[in-house]
Structures are given as C-alpha cells and as structure tokens.
Length: 220
Image 1: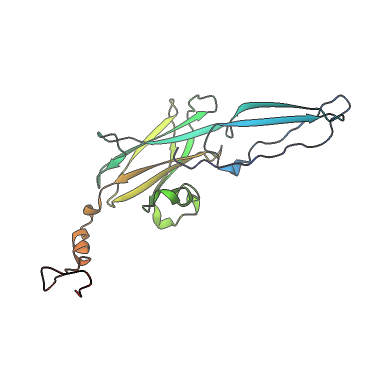
Image 2: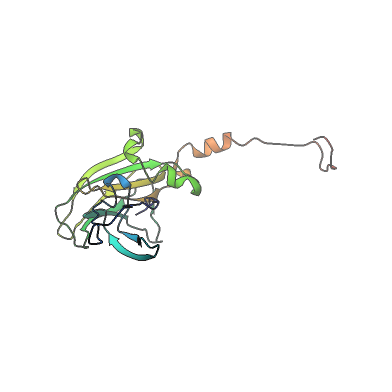
C-alpha cells in the first residue's frame, strides 16, 4: 500500500480515582474510521498508578489492532524488467484483492477502483500531494473508474490502456469497511507525444559568439 501512514500522538484515556476495590473500567475506540490508517497497527499502552503515600507502579504492554474488519489491496503486475512501467496503448494488468482481518479471502466483495493521472512530484512533497484526498480530485484527472467483484480466491483483475504517457495512481476502496489502498505505475515516455520533438526544438535557443577566446571580466 503506497498510501502514507498517519502519525499519532499519545492520548490520555483516563486520569482519575480508582473505585473502592482499586479498579476502573475503560471503554474507548482506538481510532475513528476516518483516521486514514493503512493497515494493521500496534497499539502501545502505558499504565501508571499512584498510591496516597506517594509510591507508584507502572506497566507497559502492546496489542495488535485492526482498524478495519476487512482489507483491500491492489497490485500492478510488473513488466519483464520488474518495474510497473508499460508502453502507450499497451495493456497494464491490474489485480485487486479482499481479505478479512484474519487473512482469509473474501468472495463476492464489491471493490471500487479509480485510476488517476498524477503530476511528477519531488520526493519531499509526495506525502502531501497524492497519498490522500483523491476523492476530491479534479474529474479531468480520473482516467478510469469501475467496480469489481472478487472471485472465490478473493481476487479480481482488469487491463488498463491509455494513449497518454505519464505517471498514474490506481486506488481501490472497500466502501463497506472503509479501507483504501493504492499503487503507482507508469505509461510511455515523453517522446511518445507526437509534438514532443517540436516543443523541445522550440525551447532551444542557439547562442553564438564572435570570438573563440575570452578573458575573465570581458564582455560577451
């Protein structure tokens, strides 16, 4: 899953007095559905108890936490060189899957799939630009949308084909559980554009000088 993992800060669940037998019961949801969690997580707990005399004791433990009852995944089949890169008007095989939190395949699961054409971002702003909020993306950037139903192995697939070179992002959503997953792939090269060479030539400005040698500080 290429979606960025959210960051969390410590949360105080309880601070107060224990009951007459020295106990307290706490019931609270670990994460809201809209937390953008990407998969199973580890929740770390710290418990501290202070006695009236000033003595204290502490316990730390961790549990595996599933923010979703069911998960979905997507994979762009790699080419013969091991990269998710394909040519213009070439079939891009895309596979999706659905499993329970126990890892069992789910048959007949309806998964929503969308493919977006995205810009080429520098590594430092990718997390903010394309790993989130695709549902608010400009409709012009959506190149394919469909709903797939998984087979007995919990999988489904299709081929995507485009005449536009560029970078693409395929996103699969389980609208029942709320889990979202995605992956990038690439189609073609800039040279695939018919007017690429003309645009490149138009951007080149020839420069000539009237002397072969110059000294530092001379006017050119």
